[in-house]
Image (cartoon, one colour):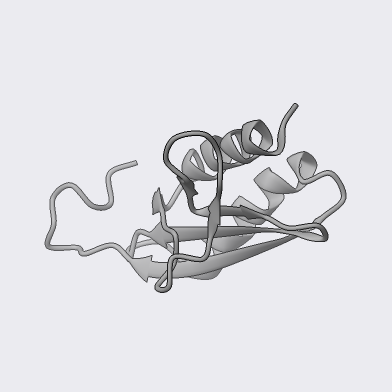
Length: 100
């Protein structure tokens, strides 16, 4: 499996966690994995860590959401540390935000 394929699996796993609205490249766009075509936003594969950057629902405990993402992604990380970044809270006034 390539690094990009692994990053895609990690992204899918993280996005499926309760409380996650979407993945984010972060405020400076550094949480990405480069692959053919468009970069994969929200997952950065490093030599010793995997960074996962998420936008979360404001009506769920942020810490629990981050812990759930970390626990779900850890088995896929190949022994790397998993660091979950809360990039933003979804806008509760936006009806498209917050839908699981």
